[in-house]
Amino acid sequence: MNQLLDSISIIIPTRNESCLIRQFLATIPREVELVVVDASDDDTPAVIKQLRPANTTLIRSRAHIAAARQIGAAAARGDWLVFSDADVVFEPGYFERVHAYFTGDALYGPKYATINHTVYSTCFNSGQQICDVLGIPAASGSNMAVRRRVFEAVGGFRRDLPVNEDTELFLRLAHHGYRITYAPDLAVRSLDDRRLALGSTRKMLHSACRTALLWANLYIPLPKRWLCHDWGYWRKTRYQELAK
Image (cartoon, rainbow, N blue to C red; front, side, top):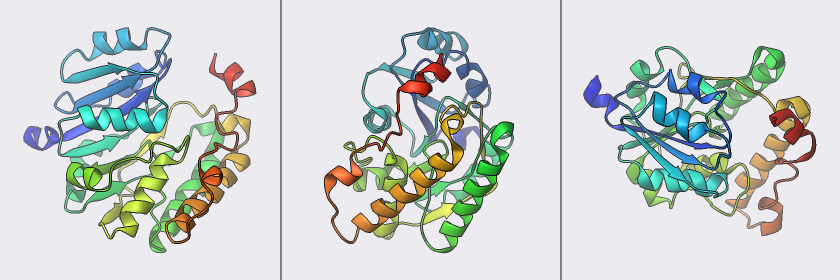
């Protein structure tokens, strides 16, 4: 098992996650490499160094999320690149089961929201399952993995996207014929749903519309401005207040 875990690199972007990173780190086996691309102003880097000094690479960068994930992937050593976020935890048994899916090229699993957003969580994960049946991989950047050689073959993330870079990568992988598996038993659980507090319906519609546009763009080129604007996803008003 240890040798199999050595083939995995977990890549996360972080920004001021000192309050949550402890719980995230507690769910990662020590044999798994962790690559953190950090843009924090708080003591997130110090917490990571203290709690996980071994098998961890910490890169300081102010790059936006797509570029940060790309930077982390370039620094990782594993054959499998697992992309996640610092505000989630891996469910028990995740790393014991993940290797069963390593026969394909990529995989993704569900992300469960906090108890305050169970309706959204149910709708989101049901939507993932429906999309999977339709052959549309609705992957979340909090819980997805790609074989390194496949990731490099397609050029990695589209760095001009301010959001939905995760979904776009998997849509592109599917478009090129790579084998993608939805893994319902490989789940992560959210520790903080700040963006859902701004409106879960708004968040769901935002994701659905952008996914549809990104999928359509694979067949019919759309204006770049439609895809490269965040549509208010990183809105600074109430989101900043909630993040304090």
